[in-house]
Image 1 (tube, one colour):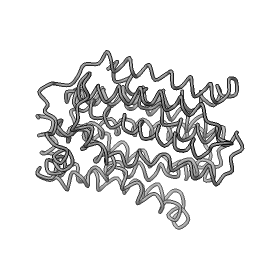
Image 2 (cartoon, rainbow, N blue to C red):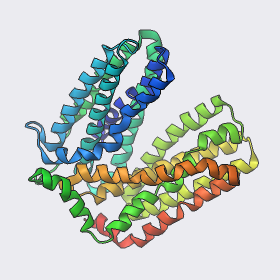
Image 3 (cartoon, rainbow, N blue to C red):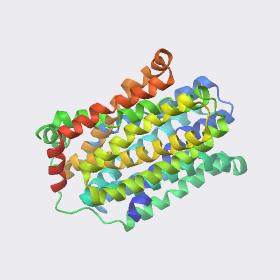
Image 4 (cartoon, helix red, strand yellow):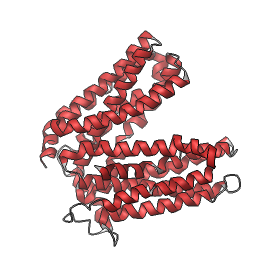
Length: 398
């Protein structure tokens, strides 16, 4: 579990440095908005990381094994890449800075691929829920450090020194990699790159109910994600809380509640098992959307707002712990880097497709009915979960 926290920190640290924190640096440096908008493309590797994950399944570095070897390669490469960004002036060489930021994002996404695979390979079924939760704890802390703390630090020591300091913090992840143990040496990697590419697909679709499992992955978190697309806008514009209220309660307390929910849910999973955890946490996720419907009816009320935000983030954290554990259970350890990358990418398809409709839905139906509709969108995922009950119990036994 200590290793999970350290690797979670290493995995979460680079993301803000190529997104929100980088955007702040560019803004303060006086870069025009069009250029800043184009910089958002540097995050593309996080979406496409499944394309090169077979390479990391197939080849084994000459040190530390198949998983830890790749982790430490990406960690040292990230330290070098983030340090290189320090040497570039946004005003004089924005294109070069964009290339370096893209490289850092590529290395960070690659680290995510192999860390997810390592977590899948090393954790036994009973420890997956709490393992995901402790990983999330390290990940969220790192995002705070590289996000909010980096912005505060930049005011005092400048952007170059801030990025240099952040690069040095990756030594935490290196330490985690060195003290970790390599997964079972009996796991045989793919023998060819062709097998590494097509083997994961053949393995997954040879299983009974494979397509139903894919639908479950798309739909399980859909209601939670649908409501989350406009939560901030609802609190600001729908019930007229201040930006300070939203920042403190929705963002600050919400983050703490998400971590607490993941930790609590991961601990409960040891006793409940995978299927019952998915079902109970999924129902709680669905009901939590109704608390925002009540807030929309009542109007500006701090007590109900705090309850709604806490309930939604607690249940969302619990559901996330169980959901990631399900994806891990579906992975064949021989192909875990590729299968986890693919399944986690598929998981966001539903959110991407349904999110653009949220604004139109609010305009047509109003806020209370919108949150009721988001509650209904959680039902298909729960129905599929019940349909797959036997298969999920079988995954537990494996």
